[in-house]
Image (cartoon, one colour):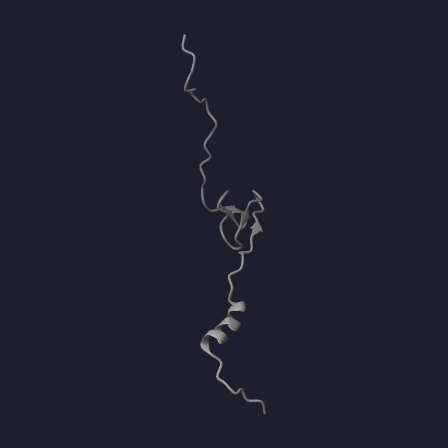
Length: 74
């Protein structure tokens, strides 16, 4: 039976094992309502929906009349 002559050092052993422990990019799914990327099984951060219902209420700022900084006053 084959037996190693020298003991494998901790550094050499851990370098070999490190190839499987690297961090990967998170998998992203599309939100069915707003089509923005989101993590699976999580509430959509853009529209606040999960499983077809609104979980978080988002207030959308309405585009009202805006005042101009250098407006012409008569």
